[in-house]
Length: 120
Image 1: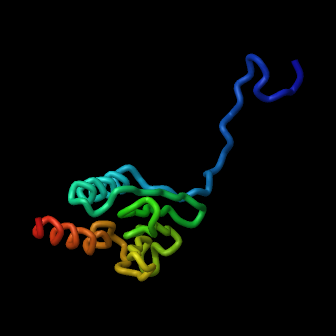
Image 2: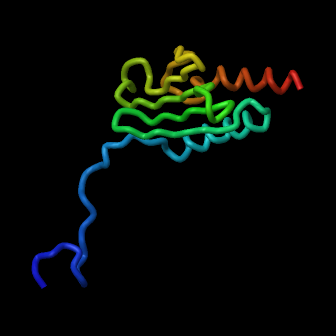
């Protein structure tokens, strides 16, 4: 056998370094999906999408699949020391809230959920 990596019987080391892709930590994703589930139960949202790039991790929630997202949550670690790495965008792309703490950034959606439940 020659110097072929991965040839029969050889162990190939996992490439060193990070993938360079931003993602959600388990606790963050659990918090986001918990809110999503409650919004689905209230009839506000029906679908979601996630996108992961080198700069940001994005969670978008939709009322209907064919529409623009009703809410979009973005995590940008590069902004951690400035205005906070979390940003909540509204349906028309306006910034609803920015901050360092996920719970505080999700507060406007939580309030909307409480209003929707009170109306029922």
